[in-house]
Amino acid sequence: MRQPTDQQPGHRPVPGLRAAHRSTMLVSLPVRLPAPVVALAPTVLALLILVPLAAGDPDVGPTSSRGVNATLMAIGALALAFRWRAPATVTALTLLSGQLPLAVALYGFAARRGRTRALVVIAVLAEIRLLIPFDLGDLSTLNNIANIIEDPLVYGAVPLALGLTAHQRARAVDLLEDRNRLLEAARQHAEERAAAAERARLAREMHDVVSNRVSLITLHAGACQVAAPNDPAVVKETLGLIRTLGLQALTELRGLLGVLTPASDEGPSLGGLPALVGESRRAGLSVRLSIDGPADGGPEPSPAVQYAAYRIVQEALTNVHKHAPSATVAVTVEIRADGLRLSVVNSPGDGGEDPHLPSGGHGLDGMRTRADDLGGTLEAGPTPEGGFAVRARLPLTADVPAGAT
Image (cartoon, rainbow, N blue to C red; front, top):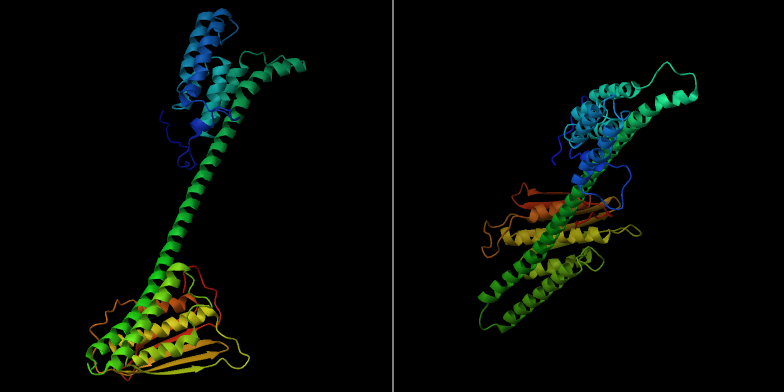
């Protein structure tokens, strides 16, 4: 059965409120009954029990006529079948019926709609209706007082209190469900962001490894291709360099794809810069390396910082190979107490680029991301002399976030 939407003056409906089904019973049963059974049970019981009682006993009902009482009881019983669809109308009809249908309708009205103006009005009418059969002037004994307040309390106040409690419980359950949905969506979003960050990190690592090593391999292969046929020593040396670079690339890729923790003591560090610069020199690039620090007793950069510095220098040299292969390059690393400064500055080239070395256009972004992840900064741009400079400042220690470096 489709339930109507809650609409209360001054009260914002809770999305997805299902009080009609959850508030039928305050005490959970071991077996959950189907909704049609719960909706029709009061009607069936009233028709089978209360209507015959009203037809046989004139005291059961609001009038002294057995036929009228049975008819009113039957109308009230049938109306209870629609108490979740039109709770206010059903409760108003049961005011003329027996006490039990009125109590069930009051409970359903309070549980479905909560505290509203209509509920207050009908509750007052219900209490008056339950007081009518009694002589309000006979208050001489406690027994008479108890008899007078028994019906308004048992069939009026108690169902109202239980219904309002069930309504609030249903609202709380809905709010918790909405909160859980939001938390689950936030968790999934965080997982997606973490996965995207990890994919970006892997792409950055793959770019740095493949771009540098394969670029050098391509340069050496070109040099081998143009080498004099009668100079096998040069060819042999070049092929050896290509083999060495290929093995280094495979080793780094294996560590990247296997353990996924390159920023450790086993990963590239500042100690590997001389070999890195030597590889560029053997490929024909004029490179000068200067490493200053740390001072005696001074702190050394953490493995994550050394790894990021190594990759930044590696990517900067790769860019020089691609865009200014005839330039001279100065690589400077300074380690001070307040951080690590590095710069890769190349002079103007001859205007030619190596057409065999493709460029994906992500190198500068990757270098900036490495610096940002560690809380540092990186600037890259042309120099006044017409060359290009990459300058970075990194802290000596840094807490690496998930997916960084």
